[in-house]
Image 1 (tube, rainbow, N blue to C red):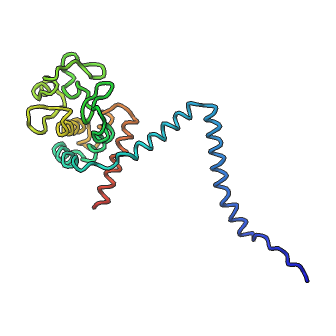
Image 2 (image 1 turned 90 degrees about the vertical axis):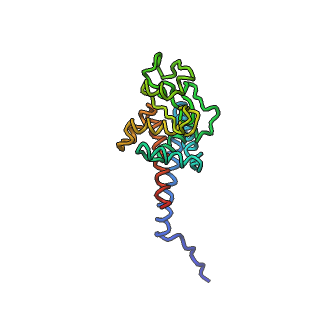
Image 3 (image 1 turned 135 degrees about the vertical axis):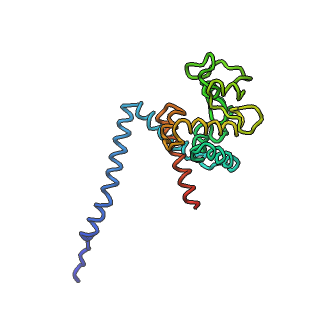
Length: 220
């Protein structure tokens, strides 16, 4: 009896395997190059780790707490800006007020992280530098003082106090600032940059703003 010849892979199957193998080879080569470059450049490893942490952070605290939405909407309607922009700032600044304390190392205060001189007004005596100032509490939360010195602090609930640690006052104050910085005219990026002079900050806020806007469209 004649032995049957073993049939090899057809040309079509071989071609398909080659096509599938190429992307895998490219990925392996790219990863090897990154690892090798990283070994030579520790700074690259740090930047890559930082980028990874940023990505992880962006995917946390992405659900807007229901209790804040009516405040965002009311403030946004008064100042003519998107309420989702306020939500995005709130997320980036204090992770929806979940940070404790609501005070940054440089002196930014409250739910929306206002520098005292921005809240009370840069015309207040002694305001300069980063804007922490030397402002007594009685002046810092006084609507009349704020009006006199051109600050952005707002007494939203009518209790006679404009308090960055009061959620309504803080959100209305942020809406006031963003509106006057260009958001009311549709210049969202300019307004965000004025809020915090950092390109990274702008990109972070825009990420959440776009995400929240997309969710609103999907709900309709």
